[in-house]
Image 1 (cartoon, rainbow, N blue to C red):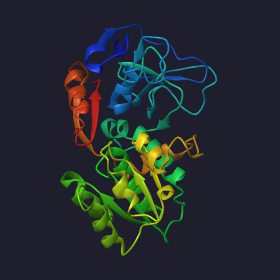
Image 2 (image 1 turned 60 degrees about the vertical axis):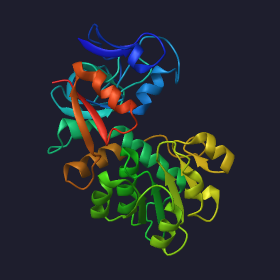
Image 3 (image 1 turned 90 degrees about the horizontal axis):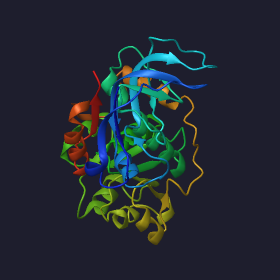
Length: 310
């Protein structure tokens, strides 16, 4: 079978290759899926550069949508032939960007949710959910205002929707690509760049209660801090160096729940009903992975990039 992986650490475009490998066998508590689609993320390229270094080779692709093909011992509640989605293990010789992938956790893919849209969900849902939990946004948040900085990213776009569904008033910073879509979802939107803090304060009618920074590292944290009461009212999922210097919290400094439980399944159902989405910018066949990687590494993918296996 085909599988995308790297045999040494380094620049992704230099070390990643499309290999021919034996089809994996699911172990106890695992399932194997015939992969239909796989989401790509900046985390894939960080792994290539040595994040969580370990035994090589390592697979690429942390999000999977496909059809159950085989079931390991002890697995119940799922049958061969059923559509599922879930995160792919990132410490193994093969991951999600393969014809077949072994999963440790998975959720049913509801009717009405296509494989491409399903493959876009796991990382954005997990990261946004943990970010809001670490920030302290309650499940019933109808008395607070939340700023999501970087709402044009997949995580930011997901976080805006989650906060709105909890009843929060949401202000989002985003570029032109998704500004109108975010407004249609119910957020108040303003642009990035100079004067952002003043625009947010005007939209909020004062300081916001909490701020989640999902933007790529861009030296924007000082502006975000100006919109809240104190630096600890901000949590970033990206700019950890600046966070340490400025007193901002990070996703790794908070005791947010690490078990998604039914959350991914819940948002998959909402996505199937048209009530939640992670925007997909482009799809690529597996053999065109290099073009997808180049676009992802450019820092301006315009949304989720997804590899198609079939």
